[in-house]
Amino acid sequence: MSEEIKIAIGSKAEQYQALIPQIKGLVEGEPDLIANLSNIAAALKFQFNWFWVGFYLIKKSKNKEEELVLAPFQGPIACTRIAKGRGVCGTCWLQEKTLIVPNVEEFSGHIACNSLSKSEIVIPIFQNNTMIGVLDIDDDKYDQFDATDQQYLEEIVRLIPSS
Ligand code: SME
Image 1 (spheres, helix red, strand yellow):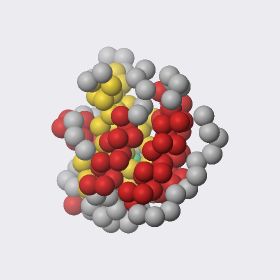
Image 2 (cartoon, rainbow, N blue to C red):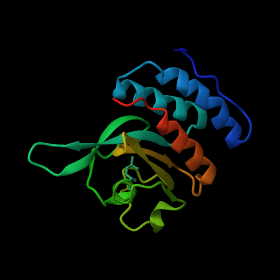
Image 3 (spheres, protein in one colour):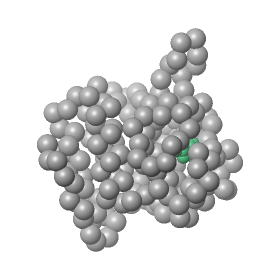
Image 4 (cartoon, rainbow, N blue to C red):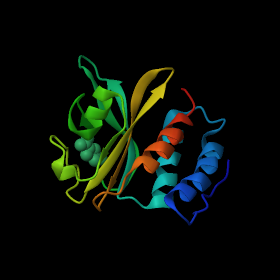
């Protein structure tokens, strides 16, 4: 594994195309989920400098329903637990599909972990056909995410080795 991520310049698609092989190199041969999520969050934050990049994992607490629990991230502190169907992350979990929110103030039920967040994309993560969590990215500018992000971020979460 390489110890450094090389920042790419160019269009957003070109930046993803340069980053993806590096992420592949980071996670290849590493079976530990937390280690891999940590490096992916760091690589995405380093390349794109979004406001918040991180993961929530679906976990069952003792005597409780399953919920999303905060996992490796880069950025300000965040909410630790999100119920299914709540907020953008919980809705992504319920619908098992990527959600792009150009203006979080217009998303009914959005959970404002930080008032500076303005737009958001949430990508479901599947392993062996089961959803295990989400990749959540927030930016402090409106309308920062589109179909290009969806395409490449969905590709990136498919690189995470099954644990
Ligand atoms: N805004 C998210 C909560 C997680 S934070 O943005 C890190 C939501 O509505 O689910």
